[in-house]
Image 1 (cartoon, rainbow, N blue to C red):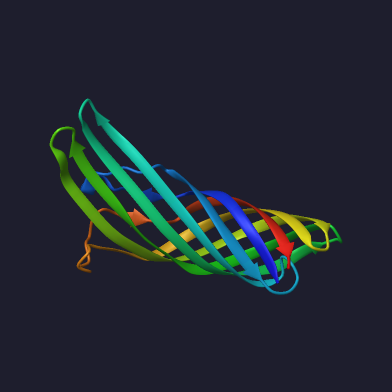
Image 2 (image 1 turned 90 degrees about the vertical axis):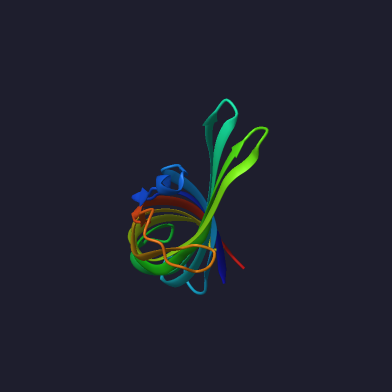
Length: 184
């Protein structure tokens, strides 16, 4: 079994929370892990990532805090193109789901919290990309992934589970990841 910690950045096409008074960064850092049985960069792998973001805005004594927390689950398949006993290259595609929530908190010093919004969100994902790997020894591989992610059927609900139509959510976007695979 191989365990691969992955670190990366992800740019979402449209994650506009301004309808609820919030704001988020356009690029999100991700950290995750891949679990794989068999040869590196061949076959199937399970991937789990988290992406969190926190933005504070305001002036003087009024502030808006936006806290975004996302869990990303993917099942990925690698198609090996090059494997020359050290350097490797593979194409991949993934399917999965993104789930999470965000909180928008408006507060004023002296008055406390004046507005508090919590929304749950989820969407289905698919991505395609390429991975370049270098095998340092038979138990250790370093990899660089570049991909484009597509999102489908994004849903937004309040805490009672009622579907909402705004803000607009599109988790499509480009990503790049660096990983280091260890065979256990």
